Image (cartoon, rainbow over all chains, first blue to last red; front, side, top):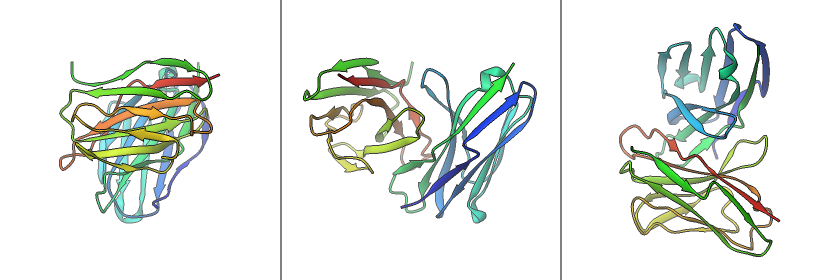
Amino acid sequence: GIQVEQSPPDLILQEGANSTLRCNFSDSVNNLQWFHQNPWGQLINLFYIPSGTKQNGRLSATTVATERYSLLYISSSQTTDSGVYFCAVEKMNRDDKIIFGKGTRLHILP
Amino acid sequence: DGGITQSPKYLFRKEGQNVTLSCEQNLNHDAMYWYRQDPGQGLRLIYYSQIVNDFQKGDIAEGYSVSREKKESFPLTVTSAQKNPTAFYLCASSQRGITGELFFGEGSRLTVL
């Protein structure tokens, strides 16, 4: 099946710093999403981004489908950005089977 | 409010007992999913359903069962055959054929004593 790899696995930053999280996938995909899991376990949609670039406040994402990767940028980090960031993809054959990477655990220090 | 409701949020059971976790959505989504998350790990797909009365096994279906009798409901039963059932279970839904964007419930934390 399709492989989804996220890097780095863990990241510790000072408040105010910028960060880039990466998601590589092994096959063509129909869609790609980024999620943030808060300390209570809730998964929040950040971006639905099968290709191109999107921005939402301090967060932006870019997916280069032809090269099979996506990047999530977080600028001017805040402590509330802490948590786990997941990338999830649906394979191109649209079997609706959405596969997650193992996530990047981000810890923002005050 | 539209969304996905999972219940119960916390559940304790003795070993050998079957447990059913509820998932209800009022988003009118066709597809529904169950994922399992272990501490410090990613999400693994247990079962998914693209349409009423149809469902497919995910990557870790052994020891679990599901039903999809209504569009809005996708309950998961953790059977006694599941060797290590203690985990955080997440239900999600998406609308096929449009964006495929996935939305999650708040999760159910199962502890088997």
